[in-house]
Image 1: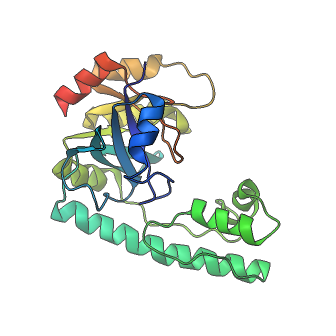
Image 2: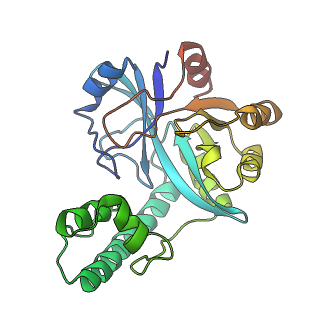
Amino acid sequence: MVVADLHVHTTNSDGSLTLETLPDAAEAAGVTTVAVTDHDRLHPDLRTPVSTVGGVTVVHGIELRVETADGRVDLLGYGARRTPELTSLIERLQADRVERGAAIIDRVEERLGTDLPIEAREGIGRPHIAEAIATASEYGYAAAFEELIGEDCPCYVPRDVPDFESGVAALRGACSLVGLAHPYRYDDPESALRRCSKLDTVERFYPYGRDVDPRAVDRAIERYDLVATGGSDAHDELLGEAGLDADAYRTFRAAL
């Protein structure tokens, strides 16, 4: 039984949960602990590494995309505090998100000959723009990515992504634990898992929507002495699709 969902997004990035709706969502899922891990942002209303919100233990975290020689991977930082280094990195990434979002919106509007009901802001991502495209045109959400704003599409604009080393350094200075997210979402999971030699955790439990062989992750956990984490990567209000049971959570909490 999942008691801790350690990968959740809020309206602070591209999720629909808020701190106000989180307790009800957690109760509905039978989850007692949630890690808020918004993309490239700390949550402005979480001021301590761990807090209690409506009776739910909330771990303040962050999900940070970084560049490696073998491709991009996502890191999860847990027990986050605000440090000058991480704050500076986040401010840089958010300024780039706003600039990139405005550029994508301009390209889509020019291509479709219509105004989108969205403005560039901090935290904006392509999912927000895809929703606006679906509202204002005949394109559905998936088609917006496939034909307009996905990589190699006419309205795509690349974004600033820090390198692995600087990303890890910024997270290490601010977070109690730093780990690899969803290893089987990458083109080369084995290469991504080798990066765990410099990390503390790996996301062992994740709803991939397909069968995966967890043995490579288990080998990495043993080889690098990692703490197993898990989460639903929720962008809606459905929590607990994946996460830690009580025993695994106790191990995580002790490490945190």
